[in-house]
Length: 354
Image (tube, rainbow, N blue to C red; front, side, top):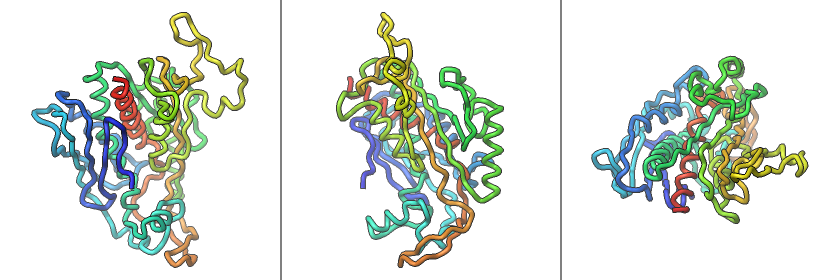
């Protein structure tokens, strides 16, 4: 089972949704970097459950505890081990899943592959795992700034929920307003419509999907390689590793399939910048110094509070209705996850270039 992300700045994680704790080990972090622990916890707080009326009501403080690799507030260059204790598991909520496969979950495939599964909240395949990624991403962000002296900025926001869209390009977004509302859409009018839709969906016992847009500004030229380690390929790999993600596109994305070359080509300015940026800041797999921007599509959460037909471990048809505490829409809590994974990809490429 693959539990490691990264080539030089590596994160290896452990733990299950209803186990005693989750956590990870970061290897390859440079020494003598003073860490801002409040910022790390802040990023975890943005992701944690129970933070608003449109998220799961599971109550977890998600307090991170560092076990090694840090002395007097600074990294030592040795592996950084950390854990987040699970405090509010209600495993009995999942007892009805013990011999039943939930539709669109990892239950069936996990059981068939390994011959065993933790039916309590999905075990290792639970999105609770992503808290580990946020810790590592918050550290990666500080390494980018303090070790590489880089002013790279990564910002993500909710750009759609269902068929409600924020009709603004990322260039017109004030990223300082992303956390001004519980849906993390930096436009109060559109955000209120999104929140209303999620509340209505929740009352129906259903779920809804959406999209997150992410922009990377102040990018240097030269990150990425032209064949099997393209920058956009690794960003795609990271985003498609997030639970519930069904799509990734960067730059002009799927819209480019409907365009002509005369419309799509980014013509150069004399200083090497381009007049347009339909390439999304990456050409030939290598960053060109322009902003990188991409979109990530999330499916509706698989657990719904309505009856559905499914099968049990004997492949007999049964009826299942979801129980427990679940997000009616995962998108608002996924914004810091997208940012964290983006920083993990970037710090790895910066180290490879160095």
